Structures are given as structure tokens and as C-alpha cells.
Length: 589
Image (cartoon, rainbow, N blue to C red; front, side):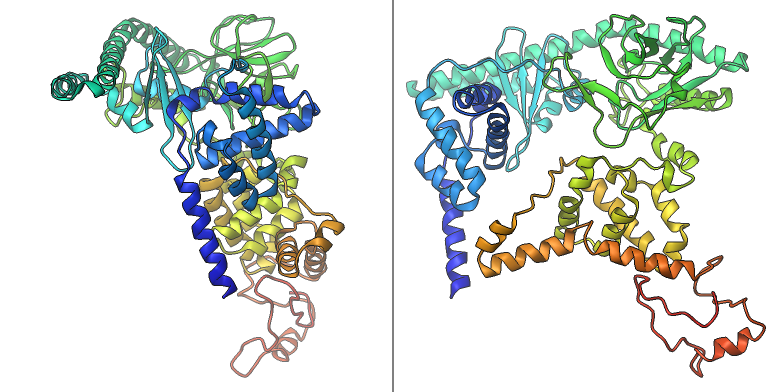
């Protein structure tokens, strides 16, 4: 009966949530202004950290529930949120007080921000002219919202699929406009204003298509110059046996990744490089300036960096991978502030002439498959000409990760997020949770690095994996599958409760919490299990799979082994499938 009451309450709560009006596209345009004003309002009575936490919590609520600002300030919404989560409920209460006092008033201007990598890639793919601005807003319950802002400031709201439809042809716009005008004559006067807005939207779409075609025509000259420049570089690579280069790999922006050829002239007393690309990609240079190696769109010390690393190494491939991290512009800083590269670290690898020649041939092959007029690939790939699309990370890592010491260690933030990652891994139904938890505790490596084929190769060849009969290797394989789907998630650290908070919980809730802590805690019982495996490993010499047991210590090894075998030739003592409590056979195996 209690379960039925809980289910009925959940259904009633969901129905009330569904009845609350959804956010309009205009709400997304004002989102960051509202968030900035909300934080400024809180700073009058709270410190910076508390106000910033409330601002982030408000943005999460808006994205999760997709409700308008007036709806979020209603009593019904505040009660529903508070009933589900106390922290979110407190944020909703603060926002309701702010919005009811601020509604209709002037809002603070949010800090300017540069386009994200997703927005730049989408704009390039759909051929958005430079004079138009594109913004992407992520939504949980609906398709992501795409806002196109025309040069005159008017906005067009669509989705990613709708934007790609705009970039195909303008003929459909004319037909739809005629249909809209015919409907306008048939509709009554009450809908005249709406029909006028629809006609204006069609005009903006037509203008967008015209400007896109003009932009592509103007880009033909740039593509021709890029072709000539690439042909010159290609000739130098083929003729000069000492012509070398470097490759930038890792989680750097798309403007940085790829193969670079060393230029004939130096810059700032150090070698400088330009990215190999025939067309379709902006020019990128790698050079040394003001004590750091910089990737920028021009060979100029004053150019806005795409990324940089603070290191005074003579060449970029000598930069210490375990030293200073690569820095990229923060999303909300308009290029003024920089932050560490998220995910797998970036690094630079040396390319000999033969390797550089192979990369150049791949670019040349892709170039010949593209349309000579617009530079687009028949398959629709917006950047087929760059060898950046090839997964060079795994190749480079497989050459350099000879031991676990070469694998990047997890940062304190990543270690704190281990339990959260394991909880999601378990929630999605992936097996080998114990194996993944054990590997995290034993090696303490970055989750992104653990989700690579190079790391899986290390684990597969590890004697400990043989002790576990391949258990560790299977765990890494499933973690790679999990990370491919969820690796881009921003993992929050696990929030541990104090003893007092645990004592105040209801019995059922407390048992569930303690069960989750025991299941997902990386630094708890794993220490004992790893210690046990280490003690077993000291008594084992593993030079071949465990399916072939060869004792080589005593002269009577055959007789010693028979004492532990059944008449059918099987071991009579069971061994744990995960490798724990491995049975000894009287002699080292």
C-alpha cells in the first residue's frame, strides 16, 4: 500500500510539473542576463561563493525542467522542486523572491563569451556567413535550441536539424512564403500580426541563404590560395629529406589539432610551424612567444591564442607532458581568461619526414574527393581534408605508454568524481563494476586516459590481469564503451554526509546511502583487496596464460601437482573469478 501511495504521489507530481508552462525561445536569449542579475541580487546578502553556487544551481534547474521564468517563480513550482530536492528547492525559493521583485525591470548584462567549439563547428558545417551569429542552447527534454541572429539584430529560432535544412536550398522558402501569404488572406484579422512575423522569418531565411552563397563565392579565392600553399609545402616534403614537423594531439580545440610542417624561417629565435590543410580549415600556426608555445590564427605575437602552454622547451615536441597544462580560452571570458584543457591532456609529437609525407598524402587524397567549387565533401563532412579527423591519440599513446607511469594521473577533482562515475556506470547497467573500481584505486589514473585502447593494452599485458583470469581487461573494455557515451559529462564530486546527517536519516534511506558508499567508494575496501592481490602476486611467476599450469621448482613437480588434481585432471580447490584468494599448488606457478 505504501508503494502504491508513493507511485500515485509521483504520478501526481509529474502531472503538476507538466502543467507548468515551458520556456519560450526568448527566455533562452535572456537566460544569462537573468542569471547575472540573480547573482548580483544575492551578493547583497551572501558571499561570492554562495551566490555563484546559487547561480549555477538556477541554470541547472532551467536546463532540467525547461520552464519559463514566471513559471519558475510561482508557488506551485517552488513547492514541487522543494519536495524533490532540498538544495534545488532553496534555490527556487531565492529565485522566486528575486524575480517577483525584479520582473519587468532592467537586467544586468552578462559577461561576453566566445563561440564554443560546438557552435564554431556547426557554423562551419552549415556555412553560416561571418555577419550572422549562431548560439546553441542545450535542453534536456527537447531538441537543442539554435538561435540565428541576423546583422540587423533580428532572431530566428530553430533546431540543429532545422539549421541544416536552411543550408540546403532557398527554393522551399519561396514556396512556404507564398503559402503563408495565401493563408494570411484567408485568416481573420486577429491573426494578422502573427502572419506578419512569419513573413519576416521567411525573409530572414532567404537573406541567410543569399548571404551564405555569396560567402561561399568569396571563399573560392581563399581556397585557391590554400591549394597553392599546400602544393608548395607538399613539394618541400617530397624534395627535402630533412623537412620535418610535429603533430598536436589530445583534447585541444579543433583549430589546434593536426599535423604541422616546420617553416623555413624561425620566429622569436625558435622554429615555427603551420598546419597542413589544403582548404576548408582556417590557418593555424604553432610558434614560441613570451615564454610559451602558442597556437594562433596568425604568426604574430599579438594574435589571439587558440591554445598555449607555459614551457620554454627548444621545440614544441620537447614540452614536458607532465608539466604545465595546455590552456584554452574560457567560454564566458571573450578570450580574456584561459582555463585548463578538460578531458585527456594535450601533447605534441615529433614527425620525421616519412611520417609527415604520409600525413600529407592523406590530406591530398581527401582534397581530391571534395567539390572544387565549394570545398565540401560528397558525404557532407565539413572537415574531410584534415588528418585531424584521424584518431592519432591512440597511436601516439600506444608508442609512449610503456608502463603505468606514462599514463596521466587523475587530478584531485577527477579522484573526487570517481564514486560519481562509478554510480553512473552501475546505473547504466554495465558489468564489472568491481573491476573498474579496483583499477581506479590501484592506479589512480585519469578516467579519460583509462578509457583508451592504449591503457587497455597495458592492463591486458599486466600479470595482475592473468591472476584475475582476464577480469581486469574485461572491466577496462566495458569502461571504454561507457566513456564513449558518457565521457563528455561534467562529473561532480561525490557529496559525503556527516555522521550527524546519517544519524538523522530514516532507516531505509540510511541503509541505501551506506550501501551506495560501500559500492562506489574507491578508497575503502579496495585497499584490502589490492593488498591481498599483491601478496598472491609475490608467490606467482606468470610467463604464460593460467590455462597452462607449469610448476618448475621441485624435481617431483608432476607428483606435487597431482596431489591438487582430481582424477579427471581438474584443480580441486576453487579460485575466485576476480583473482582474489588464488589457491597455491605447493610450488610457485
